Image 1: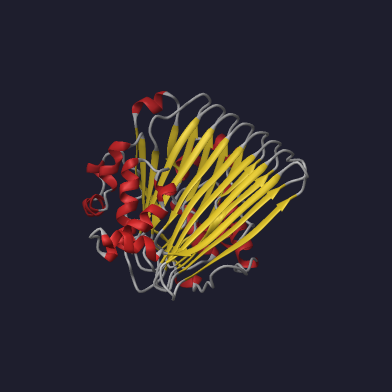
Image 2: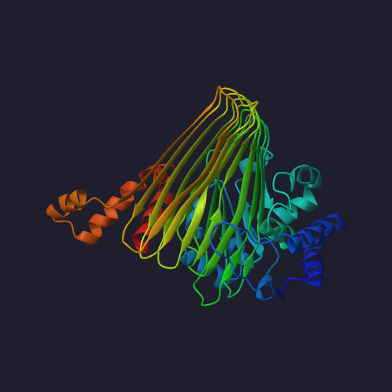
Length: 435
């Protein structure tokens, strides 16, 4: 089934296909009205869309399987070539979305015995409505920006995770998102709740083949971190260079909670993504470590936002950007320490490596501190590859291309060391292919 064009009738079709309750359809239609009123962002990359020509829903199989032998063989072969199936052995659970629907979900039995929930957002709305209704759309509203409104109108797929109190997972959970059609839009909705005194590491991967026509990825991620809990959200997106990647990600962190965003942006045509932590509880902490690699015709406009509300809160932002072959890698960030967030602090470090004369990078910040007991530190550097370092490596018999590769990988070391070993290896391969 394929639904093309953004109309009220098509939104009702999507809701009908999913057999949703009336309140979900009402949310979609309200979001659509908001979408029509809100303008495109007046900052960042220029965006040009023909919203009437985008595929808003496409699926050949809307049944979630827990066995790869039950998934359509061409899809299995494609995911196997991408290394998705092999990666499952390193995880406590995996979900896979292909086009608009989640087609595979599986989780270790021991997690089910701990009452961990890991499923699609649609299944969660039907099976766990009390939990979903309490959190869904509360931290990212459907009138916040044009693309959160669009997601609210046509969302399909995405993950729902609930970690009960006093529960720690030994290995990550992962979701993988694949766009495989021309002019395809993917609008997954992810909701994660890490209840009090618990811990979760969640990994997200994204890819798409290259077409001449542009594709659109406009996801929304909402995360709630309970008291004394920790959540780490790691993503490496390698969208094809025809994909607009426009994502809203936000976490609300309670007392003594810790939220970590590990965010890698390598592919896509244009990216706008600024993971956010709202540090609501006292002594809560937020960290965002990002890398952006921009090559020819690519604009990576990414960064982080930290909003300090609680007392004695801390945030840490580390941004690594690489621009080459005429690419544009921009850091755009915001830190706000509010009046009542006494004795709080934020450290921001932005480093950019520009590999040629055609490329560019900007650092755009909006930092504010509203009390005298708190502080914000911001460091920013822009550099080219050191000729001395390059000469030293080449004098040891290393070819120039390999020497540049080694310098770039060293530049990204802080990001790579935050990933599990198998994903750090994958990142290395992606970087090498993109240099």
